[in-house]
Image (cartoon, rainbow, N blue to C red):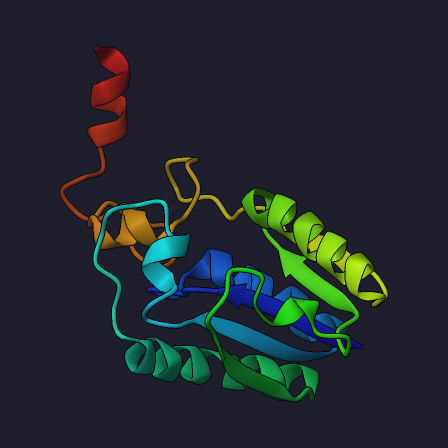
Length: 165
């Protein structure tokens, strides 16, 4: 199967790794990585995003282990449009997270209008940090958690303090 997956991946974390794992389990993977122009338009947070080349190198380093484990091929392509590569006819599956499932449905609408077969949308559940909240790049950049969802030292009690108010 030809599997598509897209994102900004800045920084890569265990939630992303769950997406990668499922993608490589299913087939050869093409990952669309948002361009420097597209990344700020697709993010809903006001925070800096590292340059494409830096994110691409880090992503490639992550993907090698998955490709080796599953004996699959992968390609990283630059995304310049929000619907990305998934509207292209060669793909069978699109890996999405719960919040990007709606975008996957929109991609299938575009594919239908273009006469392409619909993608199977595979929703990978969120990965939770040790505080029970979703692991996200934004939380990592803010210093709340590390890439594995561990609370950053010195911040262990911040959620409980907020709950007491």
